[in-house]
Length: 267
Ligand SMILES: Nc1ncnc2c1ncn2[C@@H]1O[C@H](COP(=O)(O)OP(=O)(O)OP(=O)(O)O)[C@@H](O)[C@H]1O
Ligand SMILES: Cc1ncc(CO)c(N)n1
Image 1 (cartoon, rainbow, N blue to C red):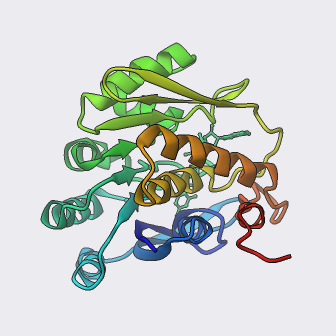
Image 2: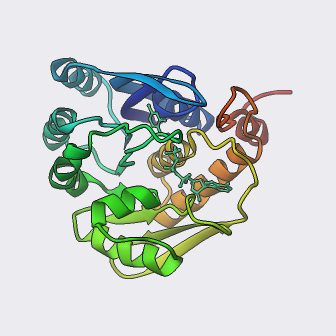
Image 3: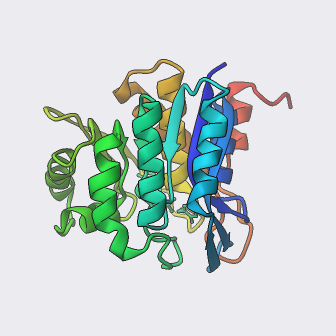
């Protein structure tokens, strides 16, 4: 069994962040571990408050994992500020894990910032060069590149700019456009698009976290990048199709349907 680590924020309502990542890891038959960078008091409707864990405790959590357990795959999600980014970046340079999937989380579905806007330059300088695969959604890709994205062609242009900032692969997610849900993967040479029909639902809390964790798990389980993305896209689509209508806002993705499908749950 492979060991997967998520470095991200905690969503107490269970739909996004660390909680979505650990559920996704388990559904992929991997052993999930977590380094909590921020505790977010949030639910399907709103973010109430954000408490950043002190940098030393973030660093200690990373040491605790790496000094003891082989890390086969890693996903990085919400990093609220420049301090958190510098701490994580320093530890990545020290431990040099391979296959870092970086989801540059900036804003929650309800609109509240999960990353301080002043940290954008640190994200670019410290984090992007360490990413094997970067998975921005449209607003994140716009913020990092400074360009507007309205079409799949724009997504391709943004992917080129993003890749020039360091990551080996870029996956621009099209969840925020209209029409089919199209994601674009760029490897420096070719584009590959991953397309599914848009599911008419408001229950999309945690889709990005689910997708990036599924990619990290698939990579650790031995898939090549296009196959890892393709299988993760299928995973998140199933998780959205069966998303749970719980809470008053954007309900969470459903990991259990994927488990039923894979035979991981016997009934
Ligand atoms: N309504 C939908 N139907 C089908 N697929 C969707 C839908 N919404 C998003 N997706 C897909 O879900 C994945 C996550 O994309 P999205 O753009 O929603 O990420 P995100 O905004 O980072 O999510 P998060 O809310 O976790 O921050 C992508 O593969 C995207 O194409
Ligand atoms: C902790 C956390 N990470 C990521 C997201 C984005 O979905 C969220 N809402 N909360």
